[in-house]
Structure formats: C-alpha cells, structure tokens
Figure (cartoon, rainbow, N blue to C red):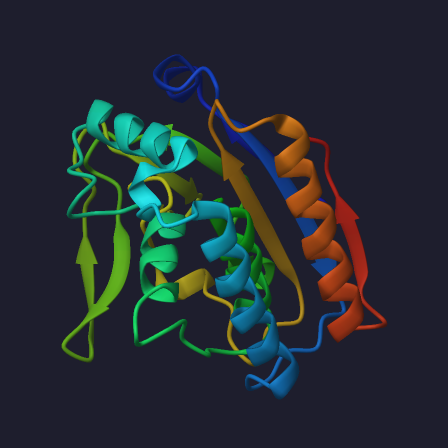
Length: 230
C-alpha cells in the first residue's frame, strides 16, 4: 500500500512553513478502547500540561501559527479550532479526552502529547490520491447531521484534504468526514501529522516515530511505513 499525497502550490504559498509526516499501516487490529489506550490518553494530558506550563493551548507558538493560517484562508480560529488545539482544550478540561477506539485513541494521544494535528484515515475508503488543496466551493463533503447523511460544500478558498470522491477533511484539519473515519473494523490506515513553523521538523519526525511504535505495540503484526517529512 502506497498512497499518493500531494500539497498544492496554492497551499504551499499560503503556509510556506507547512510540513507533514505520513504513516501508512496495514494489518492493524482495532477495537473498543482499552485500559492501555486510556492510560495513553491520561499520560498525553499530563505531557501537555507540562509542555504548556500553565498557558492556554492557543498561546503555544505552534497553535498560534495555525490560528494565523486559519485566519488567512477565511476561517475564524476561535470558533473552528485546528484539531490539536480542540483536543488540547478538552484534555485540560474536567471532561478530559474522549475514548473512541484503539486507533483513534493512539493518534489522539500523539496529537495531545506533541501538540500537533494528527488525522487518521481508513485507506480502504480512500478513492485515488489524497490532495491538500484550496477548495473551489463546489466539492462535496458528506457528513451527518441530526442522524441523517447530508452533503455540505466547503467555502471557496478553504483549505481541505480531498480524494477523487470529495472532501475528506474540512478547514485543513478541523472536521473529518465519516466516510474515511477509522472504525473498529478498520485494518489499514493513513495517519497524517501536520505542522507549521516554528515547530522544528525534527519534532514532527519524533511524533511520527512514536506513533509508529505505538501502532506496532497495539497491533504486533502490522506493517508500518513512516514517510519522510514533506
């Protein structure tokens, strides 16, 4: 399994300091959250608190950079937070981090511990190449509202991840569509770790390595490839 991932020139121009690490995995074993993944999430929250030293997540320089980029493509970052900031805010709240399933718990733990947006996609449901582009506004984003499937469209100029069938994640890394979401039946996955300057590329690589190690620990027979930052 090797998926093609591309970042458009328009996105590169918008965010010259953007870097992403892709982790591809086959032969994964998913299922309900376990004591092990719950402990990972608790530890991630502790690591986050140590990293922030009393600051709010949006005051971290990396999160501030994401807010600037969100503003640049017309999104309001205080209302539509990037996935890492949203998770970090929840991790520090009384509610704590949600327990979803083994694979989602693992990548959420990495996101919170490293304060970096991380997404997971079921590659069996990806159609064609994955592209990070600025939307025209005509693309389909299939989601669920009120228990029913609905089709939305991104704003023109909004940064989205998409494949041949439509948008898989809106506002860069804000909201994933259910079509490619990792479920308890998922066995093959693509994980994307995304960063902006001033986060050092070495920090993104370290997060990708830790993610791969955890996937191997929870799915000992999995075949995992970490791709160099792009």
